[in-house]
Image 1 (tube, rainbow, N blue to C red):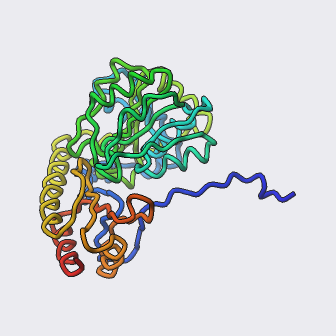
Image 2 (image 1 turned 30 degrees about the vertical axis):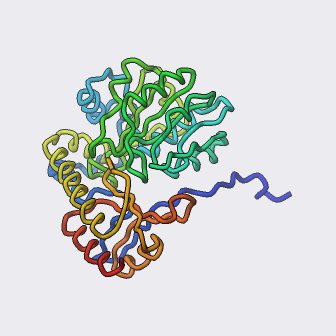
Image 3 (image 1 turned 90 degrees about the vertical axis):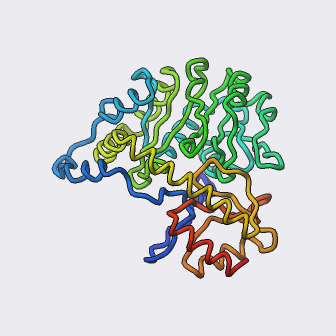
Length: 350
């Protein structure tokens, strides 16, 4: 017998390309095109290098934790902080999806969900989006082992109404329902008010998109204190010191600058709306997006060809060679200058 027979084998998550070439236009990983708040830069200058020899505080003892509690108007036991929302979601899969019944999520969605399910040996079923790339709430009303979906969804950008989310949560109070709100700040309405009514609902947020801090790896979950306690029990059984000192300090500084946060969100929304008009004029179609990206298909030119030819112009967008979406490109919203360069290149292609 070979030792390899006992290795857990999975197909890993494939992130967007991270080219190191200078001068490229990178619109493939939904990063914010603007820098973090100036308060973050100031906090970096104040940071004491000598502190790095010491273990960090537990997140629950940090100023970031207190700031998030105050920001959302919650009790202290209602928030869990992790190393980006991916860490938070991974802990949630490990903690809550253990019934043996299949977890439900859309067939077109964040492609890490099935990876975590495979890693943790969790049964799952993918529910097809409708012809408009929207979630059908009726598909989530039967027996299951848990539910997770992003809102707005990724990569489609479609938004589900809070009333529809409530119907799903209310019909599934025997399992944990997770709403991944990575893109909620770009025009959506949050499901956070539902937390007052349902103790089986967990909402996950990230600093990587609207907070412009993907490199700091900060994510958090909000839910009932019972859910959060179970999450912490699992986390502290795996790794007590998950958040580094610098991220905790910079995250707290970021949360102090609400005016800057709103400014860059509004910039991205305005550029997204202008981009929708430009892409329509070029012959693209797409569902209305509530994220910091557009999920577009051209009526004449195949997505893969556009993807490859844009790369020749040092412009990177996201393409998946998968059923139903192999003729779509996900285009992250960049600065106005970056988007103008994209439109110019597209005119020469399509």
